[in-house]
Length: 364
Image (cartoon, rainbow, N blue to C red):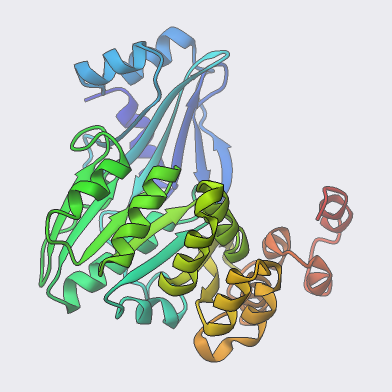
């Protein structure tokens, strides 16, 4: 058994989402959003590198020693599955292990808005799930793929970095390909997928102009494309895509967004009211004629007003969703306050008033 498995076993026993290992500090577990140190000595550089090397393949070791970061999946001796990132920093080696649940939760179990399930009825176009790192984007996409797998007969090609949830083909065929193992880049993966008679293509991350362009082409040519971006609102998502592509393609990109972007779902994870977990809270934008016109006329700054009044389409601003979660006693109001854009609406709900000036002075 690899020595690192002991830390992973402890994290699983306490239902933690992540294990962090870094030189000069003890191992740390993330529990309900907060980092907590394990009662253990501070890790030394040689010691930590030995822990990590035990679970790497020869190819991964060579790649890491050449100065590259590593992203891969790992199954511990206890059977737990983890997404791993290994890196170097000023003081030495570091690693983060993200726990992947053994059972894939459904969209209902995740507590996502009902519109997310309805988005799975589309046959072509692009659906984006966005948010910061660690907000559950991969889990939401996996739950959407699982719903498609159960309810439709499709050929689904999933491009991931790394593969997290392992899908078993049910009514659909699911082909999972991993970056670095089965394909060199996401762009190459999309290009190859389009020759594999796909109905649905999942792109783990639209991380560069070439990948975005290939994903747009796939969505325009009759495929349903699901993907992620590290953006924190619908407006920022639209602007990121437009800015990522060459200036001379700007009008073409806006036309694509207006015609082929189905929806943007932006997630944050907020502590539950009882403090025993975290809950996904979403901003939802569904492309309507009104929003399409705003995109075409460079008025994306007016999109939030459409989200505010678009409840009939399943749309909602993040602040609206946070307030609803507080009123339903589903989420912690103090944690919700930290994620709110217009914090003035949340002042009356905050229980720890000491956080008000701190967060406002921080530029809220």
